[in-house]
Image (cartoon, protein in one colour):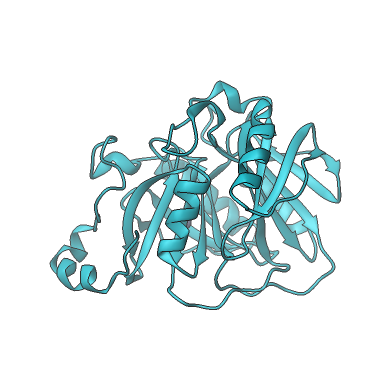
Length: 309
Ligand code: ZN
């Protein structure tokens, strides 16, 4: 995607760091592009997965809190996380998931895409989405998944909501999305060319409200090219009566957060500087990286973090 719009990253909670790494790097073939800690809770890992560089639109991140219970799926949350692969790779993924004994649904059609639904080890809802555009993007070759079939990044994310109208207004009025159409009980909004990270589906769901814990998305971050664009988006939110936090420096991007009217925590994150700011692209994700203010506590932090392998 040429414009800096759409999904920047998605962050969720996991119940086991080791299980999380095994699933996302081995079963799904993503690259672990950053191992750091939760800046607000430095005894917990913050693990980032993505393409080779974890560029915006590809990064799924986790706070693994060891042994926490699973959360409850429901409204007011981001639920299905779609990963884009080339359409021709859907058969390969179907076969792979079967051969790895990972339960999954039969492929089905939706908005001219082919979707395989599955769950991660904590019950998070994952979709492998065969798209017309994914094959144009380079794939990261992992030990288990060859480049041609690799997940290229997010196709999109679905939100489950009691009501969609006010959330739609934020998507279209602030975050650069437009309504594409309605199908299969979902309103599809696209940003830019609708390719990498360019889709948000709103689903009006008459069900229980969700509860955050393991296997539940914590927030979705949307892209802003730079601080200036981010400030304009924050102003547009305030005009809608939606307050945002102050900007927070997350080392790899700078963020503001807000609760959208449907109850989902949203973030606006800058594209700059990216994950190669404190290690080379070749070495991404190999060692624990800490922001400067936590370096003095490195020994204590390392002693408390659970093993990843
Ligand atoms: Zn975030």
